[in-house]
Length: 147
Image 1 (cartoon, helix red, strand yellow):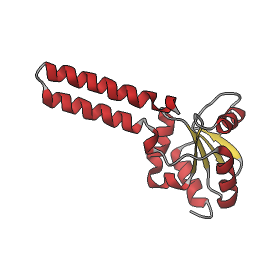
Image 2 (cartoon, helix red, strand yellow; image 1 turned 30 degrees about the horizontal axis):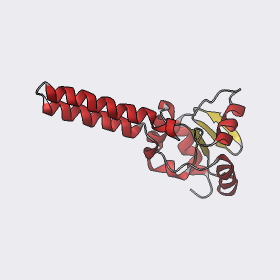
Image 3 (cartoon, one colour; image 1 turned 45 degrees about the vertical axis):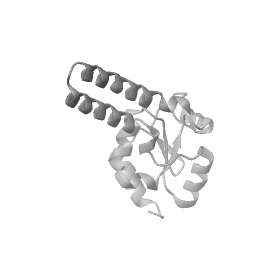
């Protein structure tokens, strides 16, 4: 749980330090701009922008029932962020599993990727797809019976 917040915390601390130094040098406007930029970076690298994660077992059960893809991800992954942003509001239709919080999810990703924890790994109809094109994932979401 804690390592998911390391990068966002470091970004907030670094932004605060830069802003404090800029204020000390007499540039409060620039300090506010830097602080806002670092806060935005911290926000998009946090778990807050992703749909609520569930366990791998529960995601597989739900996927079998509703046909929706399972997305294995981890905080700080730029490819996961790219997928999440490109899916937009449709991201909530998929079942998301944070592999840093779910050991079974991490094991499933390693099994699908030759021992590597490569994310995002998207499982559709029981078949894993490593770092798929977001347009393809959107298409899979459209095809799921409960979409």
